[in-house]
Length: 146
Image 1 (tube, one colour):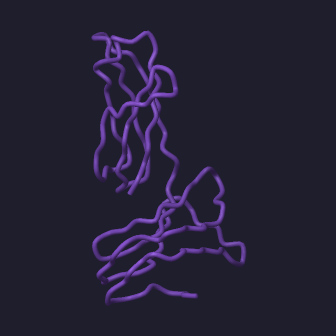
Image 2 (cartoon, rainbow, N blue to C red; image 1 turned 135 degrees about the vertical axis):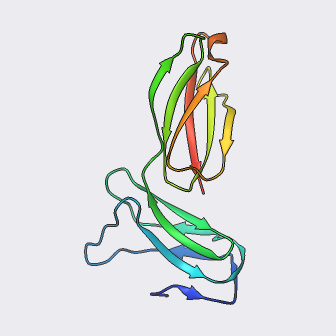
């Protein structure tokens, strides 16, 4: 049981991360909690057990080079879709700041193909599918990861 962040030294992760919220505390979108800092880390948690959040928010464990943090992020959202004059399809992706994303497309909701990936972004990004005109219908999804 740890009530504050671990500091310094070597940290080999392979066990479980279990988080419980007490006294009615419910973190808001954008909340960040440092679990360990200023360390040499190897691995990641084998299992993660986190409490349910309100308002369709989700948890992200972020493994940086010198810190491990737990963040509360909004769900990814694709919006403002529009077919452009050249036949391409353009939309906006919104997700947690600093997250990486993978944009995928499908014509049948079973087989997914990656269109684009990127490292940390500012939380809002305009994307275009220049091949959209070649298909009668096309579905999109975004996977957000740290």
